[in-house]
Image (tube, rainbow, N blue to C red; front, side, top):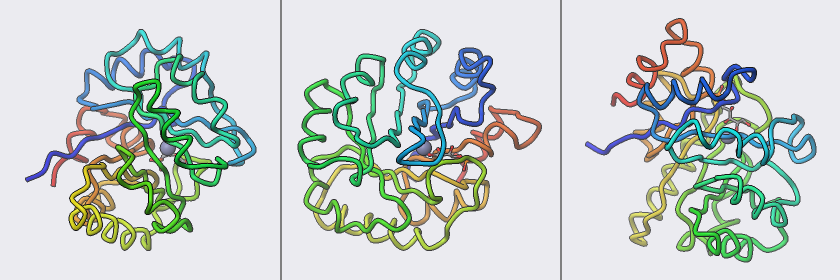
Length: 219
Ligand code: DX5
Ligand code: ZN
């Protein structure tokens, strides 16, 4: 049985005590911390930037899985790298040259992720699949937590998993949006390795983080 990882999104944490919530996530079995960066332009919501990420870095040793929903993205990579990101994920629509941005992230020795919106097809990034560590499949339109899982992305996960096997590639498949105790199972079955979860981790079972992370990993 493959090992499933959970990357809780701090979008659903208490923003007045992010440091404490991150510590609690580490103690509760989270594998990494998903940080949603939104610019109010690429997506219709605004969250946090490099200074906040930098100030959170000291609260945990877990990797920061930074999901950049910003356009343009390329010129800000260094700032997020310096702030303490370990995985830097961007959307292909937000850069002029996908491969240049991938290589730029690699110059900082960071892992590279590419995120596909529900309407973005695999063929947009097919040439880059051998250059990335992670593909983040959006199962909601990015911008807000608490949205409903879009079922049709399951086929995209299956297709991606198939390509990965056929071409013997090593990237991980991560899913983001509307993950609950049912949709997690469907996603894992389709080929997902890493589950992002905000609402389910922070709100189910009266906010019992450990319990919620454990259930998500059960398969
Ligand atoms: C949406 C974000 C997600 C979101 C997940 O734009 O990328 O990470 O916070 O939240 P839930 O788990 O509530 O759908
Ligand atoms: Zn995200």
